[in-house]
Image 1 (tube, one colour):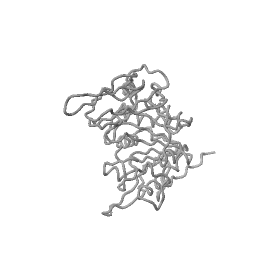
Image 2 (cartoon, rainbow, N blue to C red):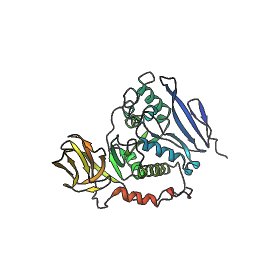
Image 3 (cartoon, rainbow, N blue to C red):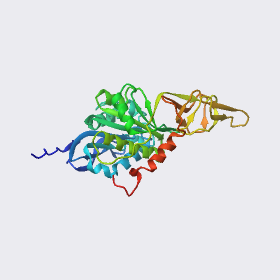
Image 4 (cartoon, helix red, strand yellow):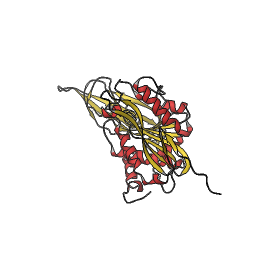
Length: 348
């Protein structure tokens, strides 16, 4: 007896047949000059049954690393044999993306606006549309983020500390660090979890910048998760070193205002008391040292050299197991350079 034909995937006013790829524009709003704005969703609807997943980027419009991750993901040959359905939204917050801004024109943060409402503010309407047309159609998802402008993050996956299923997916993703992180009210991750949609949050790089290491880790991690969930078959990326699991993290703040000179990079191990940076008086004279209060890994830092007293300048994670491996990001980058995923002549 033959297999039952798979149904088309309906989104908006379109039907995507099994084995097809389609870009669907969901109307969002109209700009003051009457230019229409839409939420573009690329639908990859596999011929065979499987889970439904989403990958989203630029919920904050200035976080362009995720946009590049999504763009490269859509070019992966492995997706041709996808089981199930993959919804990719490279730019959720079109308004912020066009204006190179984290926020919407009304200064609202989209990632504090879920679940939104059909007749609310612009942020509420966009949150409602994205949640109902994309997120709630899926079994799980991966939301791509970067640090705010003038900060950078070591590639890391954030999960709720009590969610064992998501912790497993985070380990599969394979970013250098897993950060247990409580969900914030109004965030996509919190609302999705409340509705039964498991969502990983990938944080990497800096706002308004594309970082090659962050992009490569992101693309590889998504493919690993899709393969782990049975949506892809065949040979995947070679397993690398296991991620480091953070117990907790803390920000080290500038003891005074001035010019910041940093001596540590993302991914480097520091011991308690190590010199992280100096803050200098721009008119000469005194320099104030910034030292590590704990042993850990640098998972984020300020890249703007002009700082005020109290500014957060280094983000340190305390790791559950001893760290003797040296520079975490350097190791994972070497691993990726040997991975067939990044060999242009290799078909995966």
